Amino acid sequence: MPSTTVLTRIRQRFWTQRNLTVSVAIFLALCVTYGFGVVFDPDGSFLLLLTIGVVVPTLYDEYWPPYDRMWKAVCWIVVASAVASGAFSSLYWIGTELFGLSPLLASTGAFLLTMGGGIVLLAR
Image (cartoon, rainbow, N blue to C red; front, top):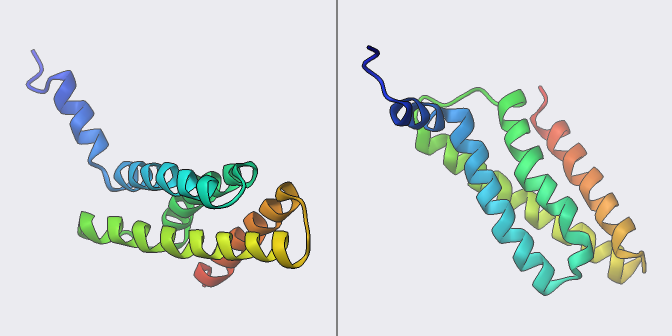
């Protein structure tokens, strides 16, 4: 009979660095997207959700060496999510207020520029 139970295996799998950073990013994405929808137009919030929940952990996995401590990886995700949400919100505001774009076009441009900027900054 195996010594590990199903709950132990699930707990061990959840506490891997990759899964923990993805979970933290998804939680942050939901919170930030709700705030974005309250402050700005909710129509542009879906691509912000993708930016923080998908792009940020992917950039961490692909372009950043893993940390030896779990809290450093979580802090990296939190800081990168803050930077990405600030960049996305600023670009969205510029697109809608200064250029008069629709929320769809402004959020698409903000998503592409934020994602592209993150890749350019982290790729070495």
